[in-house]
Amino acid sequence: MIDGNIEGVKKSILNSLETILDLKVPKYTVVTEEIIEVLKKATIDLDREVSVAIDRKGNIITVAVGDSTTVDMPLIDVKEGKLSGVRIIHTHPNGNPKLSALDISALLKLKLDAIVAIGVSNEKPLCYNIGFCDVSNNILVEEEISIKSTEDLLNFDLMDKIKYIESIIKENEIIEETKEKAILVGTEDEESLEELSELTKACEVFPVYSVLQKRSKNKIDPAFYVGRGKVEEIAMIRQSLRANVVIFDEELSGAQVRNLEQALGVKVIDRTTLILEIFARRAKTRDGKIQVELTQLKYRLSRLAGLGTVLSRTGGGIGTRGPGEKKLETDKRHIRERILELSRELEKIKHIRSVQREKRNKDSVSKIALAGYTNAGKSTLRNKLCDLYPLKSANVKEEVFVKDMLFATLDTTTRGIMLPDNRVATMTDTVGFIRKLPHDLVEAFKSTLEEVIYSDLILHVVDSSNSDAQSQIEVVEDILKELKADDKPTILVLNKVDNADEEKLQELKEKNSNYKIIEISARENINLDLLLKECTELLPYKLKSFKVLIPYSDSSTVAYLHRNGKVDSEAYEAEGTLMEVQGDEEVYNKCQKYIIE
Image (cartoon, rainbow, N blue to C red; front, side):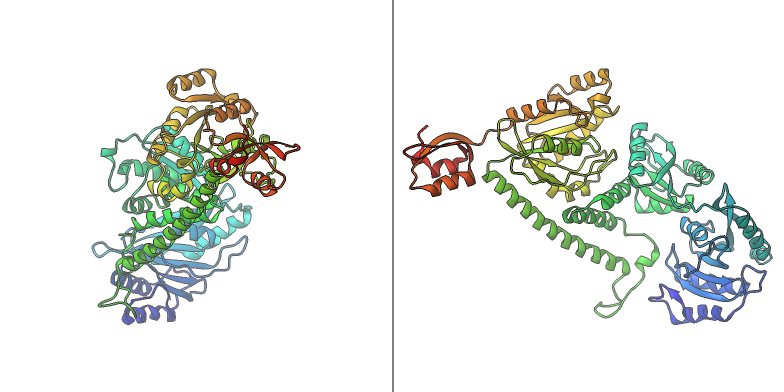
C-alpha cells in the first residue's frame, strides 16, 4: 500500500513502488541501489517527492508519494533519550540534495536515525545529502553531510554513526528547543527593521540577527529579492545561529519565497504574511476573524500559480468536463467561492453597524473615533476615559485588552462616555495602522474602520516617545486619506509624554502645527480632563435645550421625554410638571405645544 498523494498516479508507477515493500536492506547499509533506482524513476515520471522509511532491521515501513516540495512522514513513536530507530530516504525532484527546512524539522522532531535527500535530475547524476542528529550545548541540532556518489552512500557505515549519536544523547541532558528563531532581512532602514523585530516578537518568534541591504525598488532581484551573494551570506549566518525562519521586511512573490527557501534551507516569510499571522492570532470577534480570513485568501489566491507542479496536474473526476479540471484551477475556484461567501458575511456586518450608527444618530449621540499607529496607546486611553467619565446608567463592561505590543487590539469596540457638559458621546477604539499595511487588509477592515469614517471627531493618538513618531503620523494620515476620512475634525493626541524627550516633543508640535494638539499620558492620567474638554468644544452640539410645562392629564409625554430626551430638571407645579429638557428635532417637535421657554 502506497501512502500520500497518489491521486492521478499511473497504476504502473504504483506497482513499481510497491515492489520496494517486499525488499530488505542490509543492517549496516543506508539503502540499496535497487530502491534508489525505483525512487529515481518514479520521481522523474511524477516530478514529485517520493520517500521510503526503513527500520533498523532493514524492513521497509512505508513508501509515500508527495508533491514537488514535500512528502508525508510516517507516524513514529518518539522516546526520550534515544533515536526513533527509523531512517527516511526521499527524493528532491529539483536536483538539489540540500536538506530543506521541513527535512531538518522532521529529523530533529522525530529523532530520526538519518534523513537522506536524493537530488534527482534528468541532466545530472544523482547526488546525496544525509542528515543526522547531533548535540550542541545540550540542544539537539542537525549535522548535514554531502555524499558525492551512490557508491559512497552504499558504503557509508550507518550503524557505527547511529551508535555514536545515541551515546552522546545519553551523555547529555537534551533540552528540546521548540521556539522559532528568526533572521530579519530589510532593504529600507533601521527603523523599519526594528518595527519588523517587534512584529516578530508579537508572533512569539525570537529575532536573533538583522541584515540590512539598502536597495532601490528598481534594483530588486526578481529571483531572490536581495542578491545571490547576500543570500549566501544569510545562509551562513542562519547556520551559525541555528535560526529556523528568515523574515523579509517587504512583500515577496511566490517564486521568490520558493527560491529563497531552496537556497536557505529554512522557512521564509514576508512582512505581509507576518502581519496576517498576528491578525489571525488576535482577532476574537466574528467580524474580525472574517476580515482576516478574507485578506489571507486574497493574498494566497495571487500566489497560487506555480507553487509546485502538483498544482497543475490533471485532477479529473465526476462533475468535471473534458480531460478534467486542473488542481490549480480547483484550488482557485474553492478560494474564490470562499471569498464570495465571506464578502457576503461582511456586507451583513456592515449593515448591522449601519443600523447601530443610525440609532446613535437618532439619539443625537456624538461619535469620537480613536485612530493611530499600532501600540500608540489607543486602548489604554479608551479604557481610562470610560473609567473616569462613565455614563450614569452604564453597565460595567469588559475593558479592551491592553499590552505593550503591536496589534494588541484588533476588534473594534464602542463604549459610551459622559462629556463635561452632560452630553453622551461614544468612543470607538479601532485597529492600529502600520507601515506597509497590506492593501487587502485595509479593504477587509473597511467595515470596521467605517466607525472612523462616520465619526464626528477623530483623536489621532501618537506615541510621542517613539523616535519615529513623525513618520508614524504620516502613515496614519495616508491611511485616513485612503479611507476618505482626512477631512474630519481631528485632535492630534501626543500620548506617553511622561517618557518623551522635550526637544523631540517640541519638534513634533512644530511639524504638525496644522492640528489642534493635546499632550497627555493615558497611563499616568496626565491632561485627560483637558483632552475631554477640548473634545466637548469641537463636537457639534446636536440637542436643543427647552423648558416645558406638561399638564398632569398628559403623563405619557412626560414618560416620552424621559425615554427619548435628556431631562436636566423636573419640578411639580400647580398647573403640571415643569421640566428642563435637551432633545433632538423630533423630541422638540413632539412637545412643542407645551414649550414655555
